[in-house]
Image (cartoon, rainbow, N blue to C red; front, side, top):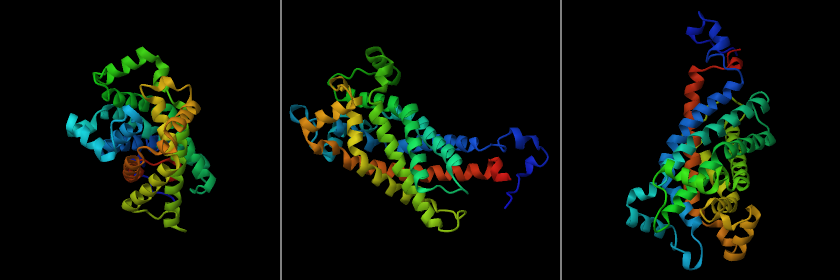
Length: 318
């Protein structure tokens, strides 16, 4: 059915070719970029404390260097030593990274979906490939440098005399000490982690949405249900790839130099700490990621609904 053209553009047809209303298929990706960027900023402000605790537990090693006995001990010691807002140390780093990360993720997904969908629907393999592409894109553009900086900042707070006085100072010190490559530590592990993460999450969410819509592709999915689908998708991704997250975190820490590469890091963790070390931080990561993915898809879908009401692509108008 032909979609009605917004009234302002009846008298200004040039807008259909050159304005926001024109938006060729590529602008579906632009919608994803804008909605994703807004979503990323809101979501990280809600869920950051669990990310902080997860990273602290993953950096905690066995023996004399071990500082925390578990999740509650880590929270208790952090609050005692630095107050409640100690759980938000490093938030600015992740906030700066979350906006471009989520923007690139959803922008890539919408772009790939636009090219791979048939009659608006994705096949099983297409859902996985679109999610994988979105994960690889965000890993290269935003996740690797910002995650490396974030981990180094949190790791720095574990020392007796923290070196970093703020975001710009800390980034300057990292680049001064390690070069520009210093913020791309663990890129292989990050690509593997983000690629598998988003392949799983988008596949689960898109599949559950398709099941709910059944034979009516135009059927609207309630936002709370979208959040529930995101929660399930987040749990699935955590259970499948926490080992990659642990390896990535170790590769990005201040002591990353003791690992030759991703494979060497995995072997040393296995040899020195056993298989259970690959699942360190699973509980806080599970709580954070499930809420993160639930909020992300709910917020993203809400903004996309708003954009779709006021910003039409050419194929939607025709």
